[in-house]
Length: 166
Ligand code: MG
Image (tube, rainbow, N blue to C red; front, side):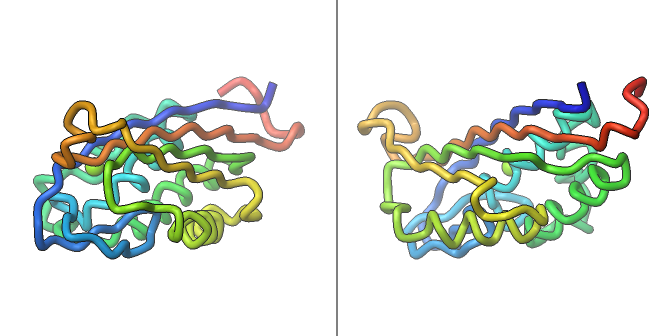
């Protein structure tokens, strides 16, 4: 079967006064992610899911947070680079499903813009990209607004006439 599934997970700590980027969209929030990059924890989890589907390692391997090249980098650029790897191997995204766990702010107004942004970067219709948001009912580090947690699952496909051996 020319399909592969991948899952990704990421957490960033939150702090006051930092910009908050999720799914390629800037969110109005008193808290933002502490990070080496722009801290887009949703794109980071998605990138790990994409890399994981093809057993290509993780984003720490491809974009080390010790490198000045990635300091403050727009995570959309990282997603573009991951997609180049996916396409180079002859694969494409069938669908992606992302769950963002954050206590506040409410993310509902940003769901469609996030889906549109990610779909454009992965070159799929918006209907293939799901972004969901949940709180954790004030439980745990997410509930205390100490951090933001994201889970991502992707399914990749490859044309039938491509070798299935690698
Ligand atoms: Mg990260």
